[in-house]
Length: 179
Image (cartoon, rainbow, N blue to C red; front, top):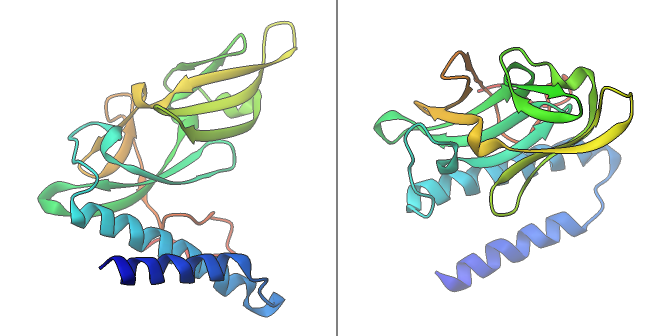
């Protein structure tokens, strides 16, 4: 097992380090997204990621796009695994340069350069305008905002639910969409 796993990761490193020809760059990106998704599925099936009902901590982050679109793979009912995407504009607002939980917050209108990063939790960090039109750094713990409801990302008590989406791909028409 260790030899095959080492070979698998060595090949991924080889794929990551080579420079693809322009005609195959799209294929390389699609393959990378597929490998990421399949690895996440493997982790769930192997039981390495604990299931967590109604809790985003049982999900694996697999993408963040356009300052607001969060993608993850979560455990669903009956041992299903679901990849979904949630628009955080439905969940978060900018209040004087601070990110807060809010229905239809549309923080993306006054915040930019956002990223979702995991350290000890999953944090959304943005540059947001305060009431004096100054840009300040704002951070919000997404584990307090986002839930896993039946395998789908959700916020505000299930008022806003994610849609099924292929993990790790933006929805701009240049990649495979959906399932």
